[in-house]
Image 1 (cartoon, rainbow, N blue to C red):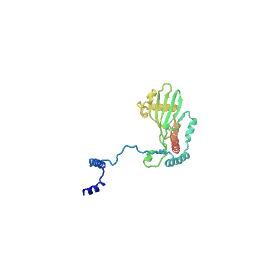
Image 2: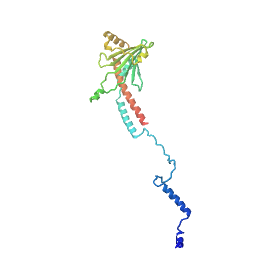
Image 3: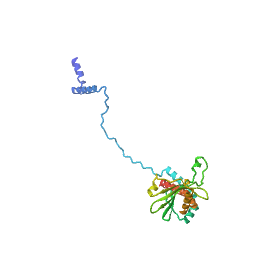
Image 4: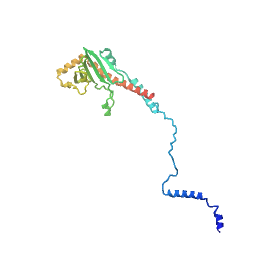
Length: 255
C-alpha cells in the first residue's frame, strides 16, 4: 500500500520550491485581508493633451449686428430726409458780428465777439425737441420750443475780471430773455470755482439797477434776434448730433 501510495502521490506532488513560493503568496494574501488595497499599482502619468485650434473671435459682422446696422440705415435715411436747418440760423450769421463756435461731437455752443477790450461770450447747449413732461403724462409729443438756458459773460482781456449773467429764453415779442443771477469775478480762478458767490437773484436787486443791466446787455449785443438764434441752434444742434451718432454706430457695426 505504501509503495502504491508513493507511486500514486509522487507525480502529483509539487516540487519543494513551488510549495515554498506558494506559501509566501498565501502569507502575503493573509496579511492583506481586510485592507483596502488598490487592484493595480499606478504611477503618475501626464495626461494626454490634444492640440486644439483656438476659437476665432466673434466679429461685429454677426446676424444681430447686421440687423442693427440695417435698422440704423433706415433711421439715417429718415432723419436726412426730414432735416432742414432753420432759416433764422443762416440769416443771423450773415449779418451778425458774433463768431459762431460749434464743435462736432460737443454739446456746447457759443457766440463770441469783442467790444472795447472785453470778450463777450454767450454759451448754451443743445436741447431735445421732445417734451419729457408730456411724454410722462401719456400725452402727445410736442415740438414746441421750450426755454433755453444760457449764460452771457463779459470778461476783461487784460485783467481776467468779469461778470456772468445766467439767463434763459422765453416766448414773447417784447423781451425774449430772463436774467436769473449776476455773478462777478476778479480772476479766472474765482470764475471757475464751484464755491464762489453766484451773485444775487436779478429780481431782488433795485429796479434801476435792473434797467441799467438790461441797457448794458443790449449794448454788448444781446437782443431778441440772439434769443431766436439760441433757440433755433439748440434744436438744430441736437438733430445734427443725433444723425452723427446714428452714422457712427452704423459704421462700427458694419465693419
